[in-house]
Image (cartoon, rainbow, N blue to C red; front, top):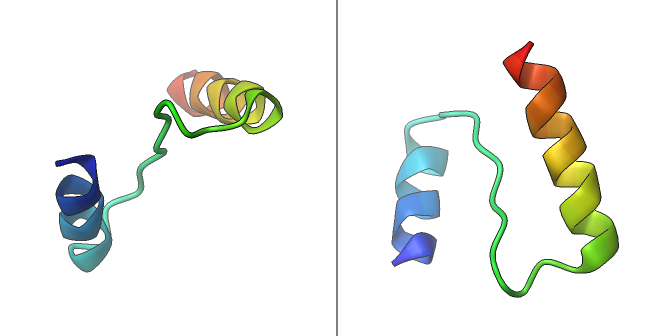
Length: 40
């Protein structure tokens, strides 16, 4: 499901960030900060 979507995005060279239940807490915060910086 998310793996398939991530594969599709990668193949089409879309920039994306993936955050799911397996994402560690420290990495999760970095991803959220990066997402918020991109959104500005």
